[in-house]
Length: 230
Image (tube, rainbow, N blue to C red; front, side, top):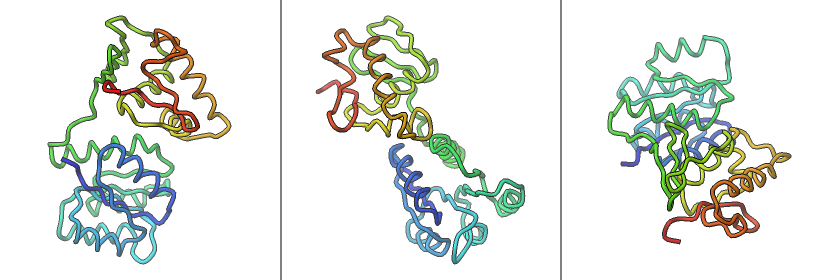
């Protein structure tokens, strides 16, 4: 069951980033830029979780949450750029369930959303811990990778890179996509380091790195994990 998340934030780049990560995690996402629109969407769309920026035009996040709390116990997560406790205390008094300070890691935010939904509804499946493609297997809990039953030793960056691709076989990731996911923030100057990681990964998991069976190059774009049925 796909849960519906409503995000309200007046910073477009935050809306775009959070929406992309949540969609990739399998959620349906509604995005607005102020509190008044958030209330309209809340009443019309009945989201399963509401994410509010504290400082927004027209109607701020605190007042929006206060109005929502009058009629619903839907999980509410606040985003704020302030580092003092003023907003946190006000939000908790209103009935906020979680509080995140900007800047934040989008991947950690997705994990917090999952945790809130599990607490609220109890039926959200956790992120899978084990992935297999062919004879290649990755266990996210133990951080062990095996190939045909033989353990493969990877660096932390190699493991994270492999986990991103094996969790979504067939999906093409650009170098910047991969860099963003393994480092939390993309730096164009280091984009080509992904090529080095891929080269090292292939040397460890491919029978012939020049003709890879697992990690394919998509020329002009990036890389993908070859699905079993390819």
